[in-house]
Length: 355
Image (cartoon, rainbow, N blue to C red; front, side, top):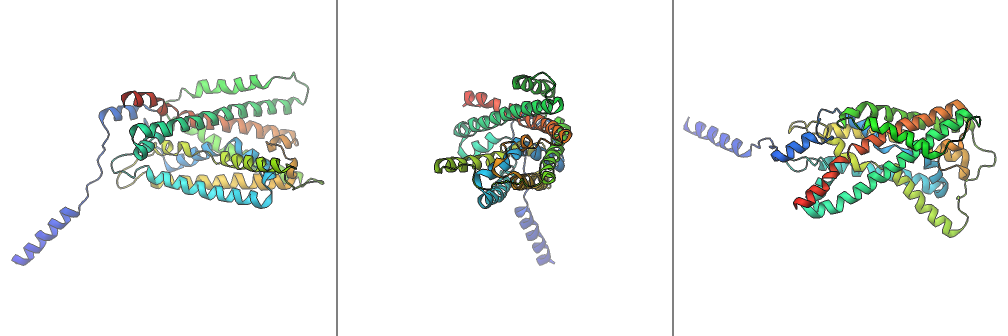
């Protein structure tokens, strides 16, 4: 009996020693107040499908329509290889970021610069990450602003068919920008989930229109699959330019941590599981958008394709007009996803001042 009691006591002691309590929230009161105020962390009730369409909206943008043009600078073999390799590498690096979001017990890296601080130190991490993130996000939003204006102008020109007064691109960009005065008043990333969902649906829709209309139009009689450039320097610069166009098409990693920050997390159900589920769905949608547009667009028009395949496609009028309006709706959502993650980096000056 004594041995049995001793054994049970020993087992109880071992169980107590091996027991790991749930990770505690190590945030300070000041950090909690900031998290409750910031748009990306003020609401943490997102579902896995929120991350799916947020990632689609953030990634699929103006770049998808230029992929046939990139193919014309790369050719069939290198072009297909670059598309596949880029898809695999970006999916792998995105998985790494999802895993790193909660790699420190009791702490969530809700913002890109917080992960940079963990890797490089409090002050150096800010200086390394924040300027690059701001350059990328501001640059992407400028592209979205111009793309939205160009698509509005294309819609206007297609509908009017030369019967309306010509309006400068600047005014269409201003019209596009005015929409964001209203949408920017929404309080947090979850509050724009409806806008993001509509944008994700539009991206799949106009991509389908782009490659579907190319199939309907068929291969041009005099289609040429030789590289667009004819000189050696032109081919070299064209090659690197195409790599940049493909890389831009896969942009979106700079807001991954912020998207994951909106998902609830517990020790039993960490946020990385629903986030990764959403990422996989998003990348399937990305593949359905990118590969058909790039390959079929290049197959139909060869090296004569424009930098925006919707410009090359002029018929049927109603379909091209619809596709351009879908692009406008999509880049509105993309712009909002990126701008709602800008505000946390505005704390950069505060952190530097304190350090």
